[in-house]
Image 1: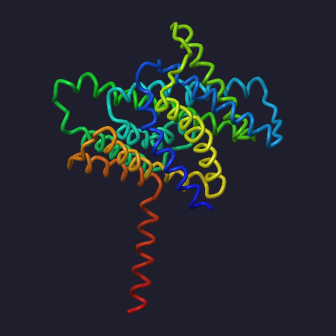
Image 2: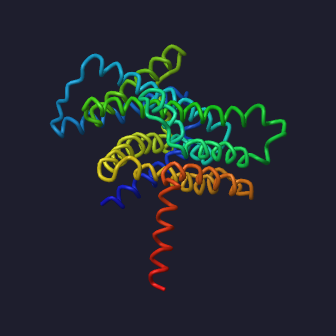
Image 3: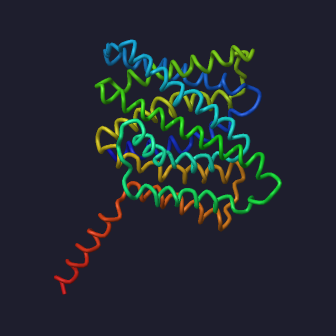
Length: 306
């Protein structure tokens, strides 16, 4: 069961990035975000009703759900959607995988949870990895425009997602049901996107193209409802640390898809840069001292066998 949940999260979150690219075009970003999370939040409310979940939230809880919706289901996705017009979605997913580093910083700031010692070398590897990943574009005329905007927007969106995680931690510490808070947060995120779209004078009509509508329903149902549901269920079964290993694999899925559909080209610096970033992320999950202890135990057992 755990293996199936793990596979679901990796495949879904690895494929949602190309769905974001398919929504690029005539529909304003805030309108796309509104329909995505209005649909996802409505479905979650129906799921909660079917579960006979009548969890009551205080006004303070609703305030934090509103903040979560703004950070994790609205403004951060505006950054991701906009970044997709500057860099490939596969690269976006690689930058997004560094959310674990932002989580460590935010936990230290909001919850006084001191980052582990391996955080700093992992962060340095992440910075080096991004530098190597875009090695062929440093110094070009485009580096000051599209590339910087794409990287900056992706990092900003990832940080917003991390803030949403901190708010989710707050909900769990207060014993609130994850599905209930997520349903409210998604609806609040949709409301924020809808309000901004209205203020900007956008229309809420959707194109009839099957490609766009298919991407919308995939992002709402699979990416938002099933993906988050499977992830949080996996967290409950094996713990947040092991469940977070999904961030090491879904960028590979996204980059593979980006290669075929967006023409992403694999150069040596891209492979090396990606490897360095993933190594930094892996370092956050697997302590070096545990690796040394396991190696010492293996060496000792080998000596005994001799």
